[in-house]
Length: 529
Image 1 (cartoon, rainbow, N blue to C red):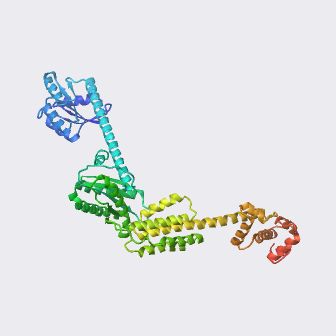
Image 2: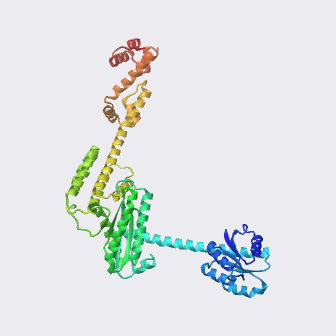
Image 3: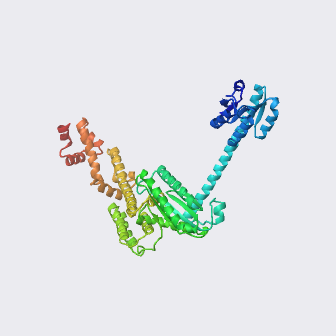
């Protein structure tokens, strides 16, 4: 509903205007009436109407003064002036102040309605145009934000990116001045817990807000973007402010770390690439920042990581050869314990290496995973490997990293054990079902082997290993159990029972029954029938 204020020193004119128009049909409502200029001015300020209908002459503050005053604070306010023929020159002057239209007394319903409709359409058109402008502005801002995110991701992934001060300004909307450029990374870690998407978005969103608030006061220009569990940034600042920027980033991390208490075990770390003189060198700065983030595995989370040391003696050791031997045997034996021991061997080597770097430990665990996965039968290999790397990326220290490797090994070996058990149990289960359904027939080992899809020799060995006895013995047991049931529960002649349980020779049946049960069939019936 559009809001309307009516101002006239004659109360009957106000009532007349209210009565003449069908306000609901016009999608309008009268929010107040005033009887002098000062009162009208206060009402406009208080109610913020869309349309003001005012007499050209009123006590206290003339219509012209009222129009001039309200237009200063409400430029979009549409005004209709009411004038008699004697004051028409005032109306002409009022139009110069931006009055939308005028009505001559006496006011007619048709003229008032037509004027209100015209102003309503003008207001709605203006509002629609403003909404269109806001939508275009929003889309443009989203496009720039997307371009910034893509640039930061390209730098992070070390993709070829041509950067200059001009492209940073013109394409990415970053303010640039002579001085230093620097990349940095902020990383959210949740350890071995599965982080929720909502939790991650809230924490990184809050982190971004803190960084933006602090950096806009310190830097000439900066870009920020979120990628997964990372917040990436590039900065431009005066060389003289380098130490101030460093302290500001540390302060940001301290503020961000205060947020984590709301979400349990989550933690943040920040890494700084070296400051460079040219935008073209930002890729190298981002690469250094990304690699430095691995040092949290050794130095701990919740700190700003700077200055990478040289390689340790870890690469020159033969630890991977020993891991290969141990994990190969673990897979052959399907031993979770031996697989855990192989991972512990790696961990012990890392602990015994002086000045080992976090990136070396991460690379070691990744290589171990590659070696292990090459020796196991794995369903959905690429998806599992990607999930493993994502979990490793959330690890905050060496203990969590090796626990992640051991969990991965354990899950795959246990899956292989289940598969082997299933491969063993399923054929035996099918064979038993087949025997239960066909024991009255002259079935053979070859027939049952074919039914389960295995060779006779392999099935015979598998059956004996699983059941503790051979196929023939099991078949006899099934037939004798059926014979005992028939002897107890029916009056069927022994000769007929002999035939029903798969024997053609009653002497052979009687002999076998006595051997298995301890008494002849007829005696068994007398005792238990």
